[in-house]
Image (cartoon, rainbow, N blue to C red):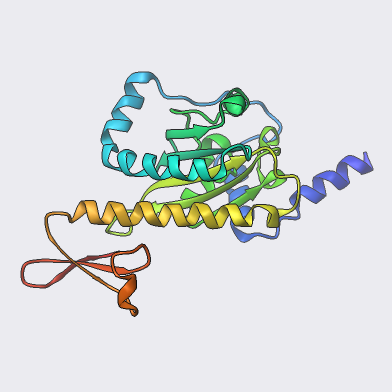
Amino acid sequence: VRNKDAEAAGRMRVTNAAIAGSWRRCVFDYSLDPGRHYAPTVLDAHTLKDHQTEHADLLRIASAEIDWLYEYIAESGYALILTDASGIVLYEQTDATLRSTFRSAGLMVGADWSERREGTNGIGTCIAENLPVIVHRDEHFRACHIGLSCTGAPIRDAAGSLVAVLDASTLNAHGGRSSVVHTMALVNLSARLIEKCLFLRRFERGLVFRFHARPEFVNLQHDGALALADDATVVAVD
């Protein structure tokens, strides 16, 4: 009994404020049982198609970036997941040899990975906190997910509102949190590229002023962009 109590206490010693806040929501807001098996919540084909149609521009832009990122990390045991702002998986890219493993964990197109459904995780907690997050192994609230290590980055529209999450999840991260920090950097980079493309797509028929302290970086990822009205009023800033 003492060993079990020590194990439970170890799981509860969560130092990351985002993880601690998520665990509180799982207990007090969602009444989730960490040890209970919940079947994945997956949209029917018709509802999923509606979701994908609604986010057609996002899917066109993000899928190209996800496919590129997947080629960069291929055969490293990761699944790349794109969800909408509610946590519904719209697109995924996974090693074919691991697809059935990830699907058994509920990582599939149409699945709902909001905190309310799946507890603390890289997608749902990113949405709830509106910040990039790492949820590493036993930081997941639900016991069935503690083998996963997830890194989620928000994708925002030109108004700064959350529209999507890009997540990389793996079952192969056996070290500490530091073992997935490099993955978080890649996911954040891809999320920012998607945001930039969404911004330029949104204002492609208008006037966009792009700038950087070093002129050679104008029109590259890290420049700034202002969308202007005809009278030079600033409409949006990336």
